[in-house]
Image (cartoon, rainbow, N blue to C red):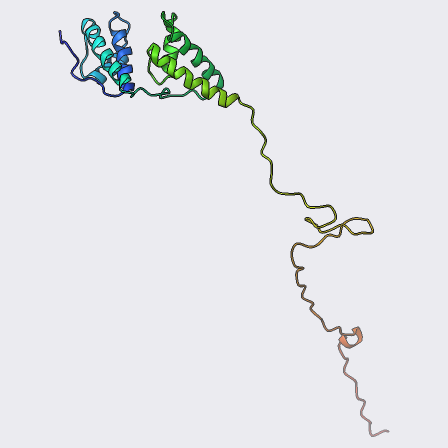
Length: 210
């Protein structure tokens, strides 16, 4: 039996994940093949159920030392975005902070997934619940409509289409773009009489009889 794991995680997230997987390893057939592979990657070796129980105590002390050094995160690494999931997380964290913890295994797994694959300890659950409650207040707080600083133009004193005439009636529309230039082409008009072809005149020559 190996008294300690080959590798002890240094970050709070990895230590929390390792503790969750080591606890599952102590129960026969609780940890599946994927979880066992993840645990082996974190601690550097595949522990037996007996080794998992001993390594759990060692890593608990390491996690406590991180917490006393002030390296515990003030909020979970994964924050729920939807309002319903946020409320559910707050309720589950409240149960996790109680002495008996969360009774339902389904609820424990649910909290583990929503908190970024971390099962928080009771002290951590209290800290994270306060952070989520603050986020919930920000999401549900009424929003004040933004007030525009621009003033509306006075009636009859300008605007998009000019001022209103003093005598009443519709406002004059001003063209927003210059009028296009129109090219005028002048054609020479020819009289129909002049346009008809000229017939050659027949000349009659006098004869000797005349």
